[in-house]
Length: 279
Length: 155
Image 1 (cartoon, rainbow over the protein chains, first blue to last red):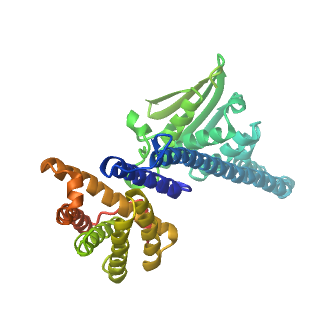
Image 2: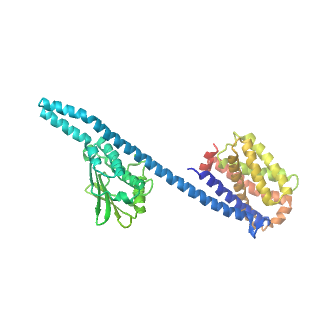
Image 3: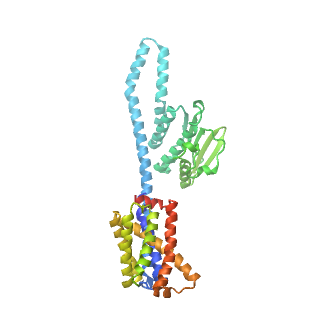
C-alpha cells in the first residue's frame, strides 16, 4: 500500500514526541513553551494533521487503483466483444459458400444441421447485440462466453437498461461481474446437466430490479456469508475469494438499494431493488 | 554523572534497548554482533557526554538523530531505516522507563530528583528498568516475535 510507510513514521514520531513531552514536562520539569503550550505538543498536533492528510492520500490512491482495475477489465471485455463480432463477419462469406454448395447438391438435411450449428455459435453475439448499452453488452458477452464454454444454460431477460444511467459504470461492472461470477462458481459445483443461470433486469413501478438466479448445492443462506473473506465456495477453493458477496452488498448500500437473497426450488436468487428516487 | 556511570548506566541501557529494537525489527544480533557492540559503545559514550552538558529535550532530539545516523552507518542501512531503528529504540526506552520508574517511585516512595542527584541510586533505578527490557528482548527473541510490517522493511 503506497503511503503507509510515511504514515507509520509520522505515527511513531508522534508516540516518540508524546513520551518526550511526558519526560520533559512532568519528570524533568523542563520544556520549551510557545504561547504557553509545550513545543512538542504543537509538533504532535501538526503531525496529527499530516497523518490525516496521508490517510486521505492513501484512500484516494486506493480508490483510483480500484477504478483503474475495473476500467482495464471492462476494456478487455469490450475488445473481446468487438473481436468476436469482426470474426463472425469475416467468416460469414465462408459459411454462405458452404450453405450454397450444400443447397446446390440438394443436401437439405446437412444444410439444416449446418445452419443450426451456425446459429448456436453466433447466438451469444446475437443476444448481446440486442443490448443497447455497451458496458452491459461487453460485461454480459464475456460472462456468456464463459458460461457457454462450461455448458451452463444461461438465459437473460433485459427489459430495461435504465439502471445504467444512474449507477456509475465502475460500480455497475463490479456489481454485475460479482453477481454473475458467484453464480458461475456455485453452478460449477454441480453436474453439467444441472448448471443454470438466469439474469433479469427490469423496471417495475419506478424501481429498477436486477435478479440473478442460479442452481446451487447451497441449501440455506446465512448473513455471515456477506462478511469479507467468507465465501459460498468450499474452504479449499476459497483461499483468495470471499469478497464478492461483500462487494455486492457494499454497492447495493451505496445506492440505497435493497438486497434480497433467497433459495427457492434449489435456485439461489439474488434480487436487488433500486428505488428510482434513491439511485 | 560520575565516570563509572558510563559503564554501569549508559552502556547497559543502550545494550538492552538496542537488543529489544533489533529483536522487534527482526535484525539478527548474532550476525550483526560487531556492529551491535560498536554501536552500543559509541552511542552510549555520546549519550554519557550529552547528559552532562545538555538539557533533557535537546539531548534526546540530538541523540535520536545521532543514533539514526550511526545505525545506518554501522548496519549499512538507508538513512530512513536508521531513523526507524532509532524511533523503535526510543519508544522502547521511554515505555519501559515510564512504566518501571513510575512503578518504583510509587512502590518505594522515592523522590525522583533525589534519585537523580545520587549516582548509585540512579544506576540502581536505571538497571532495575534495563533488566526487564533485556528480559523482554530475550522472551521476544525466543518466541520469534517481531513487528511484522516493519521488520519486513529492514530485510
